[in-house]
Length: 227
Image (cartoon, rainbow, N blue to C red):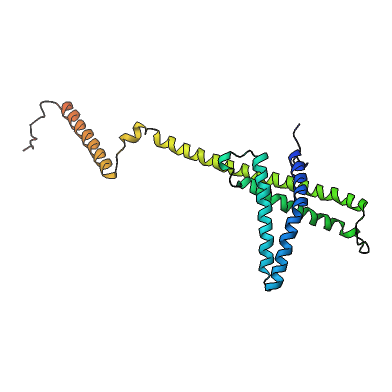
């Protein structure tokens, strides 16, 4: 029985859980970077410091999570373990982006039933929101998995088609030409000469046949007019 593509794979459930746990632990670091960036931007009056601090926090979190994935999940060799791999860095970016998007989706989903008089969420309300947040992250990871494998299949198909074309071209180059092609005239001048030779040969053979069919008495005798 084939696993339906619309239902999240077990890997999507696991990746979503690890991403939520990571962003929960890494949120303090992001808050520290944001606080220092806001403090420096207020002193200097430059908003770009706040943006740079958030980007720096994002890069640190993505590289740290990607490094953990390289060592524990992808099992990168020791020669490549000095730096985070592109695959690990991508997982680190997803570990930050997916929970943020899941939080946005959850907030949008509860807006129609949100009561503005409620200032603090109770434990029961938080218990209801956490499954929504988790399910949103799971389906986002499933969407990433489907799109990534779809693009990879398209790229492999394009490479396979290109290899088949190259192989077909090599077979055409290595295949010997037929004898008919080799014996054909190279240009129109040679073609005309061969045609002329053939016509001359046919004409001479016709003269020889006519000369043999003529009687010997008529050879060399002239015609006399009556007086």
